[in-house]
Image (cartoon, rainbow, N blue to C red; front, side, top):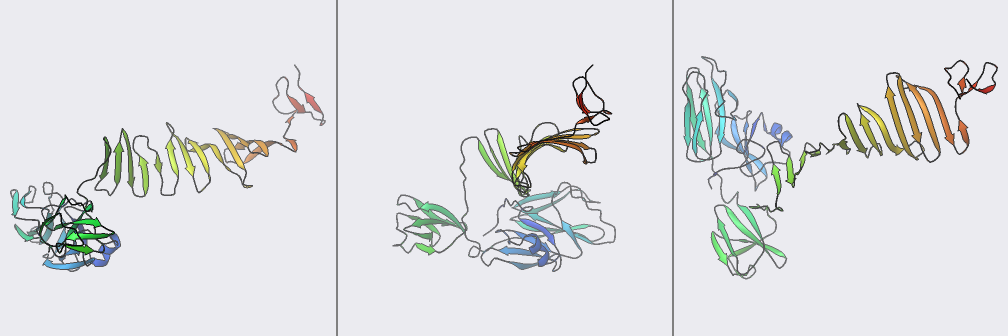
Length: 367
């Protein structure tokens, strides 16, 4: 089966890139590859291809000339800084038949390489001129047969086996595939030799249906994006983000909601509470205190420090803190009574203030 064109998310036309040895590739892709994917192995100087049936990588023995410098990702802008008298080798993966134009090679007019199928294009700088070599890529139908799941079998439907794909149906608790190239209509899977039972398979979806106005996209950054009715959610790098508002669920499990300007609301399963941030400071917290009691904490900051109001089912606390966060004074109102600091005669007093004079007598300022 000739590879016509791939739309791989993880590489350029199915190529995962350059890795020095199989171990280096497996550290980046421990789950294996996808049908049609391959990489350049710098240790063996050859192309390695993913065998979907054997679930392993194998050396295709299409050796790349040394010294190998890297993968070409854009034919239009590829302009390597090669030197006279020094050899260099570069590889480009052509995903389908066609003419590929390398427009910016040093010392020559634009170079065009034509392929009749998907191919590995090797460009070699021999020290004075550029040379190109083309290795067609082909896959074995028997090894890389893909299954198209068609749902439950129906008598009126036509099922086919062609171009490396075979239809699979579900019938009376079992799965069956079209056994040989051609089409099948009206023949019952468990009664016809044109069908073959399969115990497991990898399904290839040819269509995905969503409600009107909704869209799902898997981009080259390996992110999943779902959009519909003016609202877009994106999953990537372990973060779920709402693109229109900036709301996101972090890798730590925190839900963070922008609240305008430098403000942010944080709901944290780690700290068991809801926080409202402003100018990088926690100005409102709803959580549980050290005694596992629900607490509401409000803070007001200025250049000299902050003032805090803490409310719990057991008491109300008003505190004043300095710029280093150290408590200057605290007043508390609880079921046991009021505990607070009274003003002193030496403090700045205004009409009506209650204070303690220099003789430790409680007084009220008048006039």
